Length: 115
Picture 1: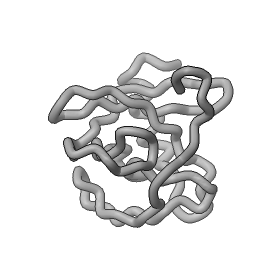
Picture 2: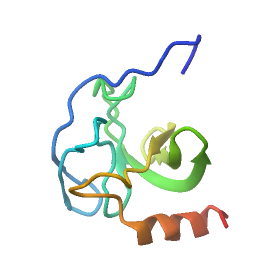
Picture 3: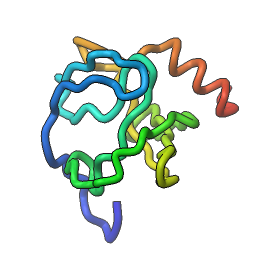
């Protein structure tokens, strides 16, 4: 969020096949846009602005850490394996169809030094 502008999700909320583990990923039903695999937590570098799918890099975004945001909850920290871009995505723990795997989040928190 820059210049005091409010974050607005753009783009579409489509199903996809995870480029890392091959899981079939369904769209979120909680009003947001699915941006990472709920099984392995990997993502693709496809956005310039959240949800716009306008980035042409398409490198695999590797989950490298976990952070707790007071307003957004758990945030997965990603790093692009192709260009090095770093981004944060809100963990989708509240999705009724396909929530993020809790065990994968716990393992990621251990790697990133979270309690």
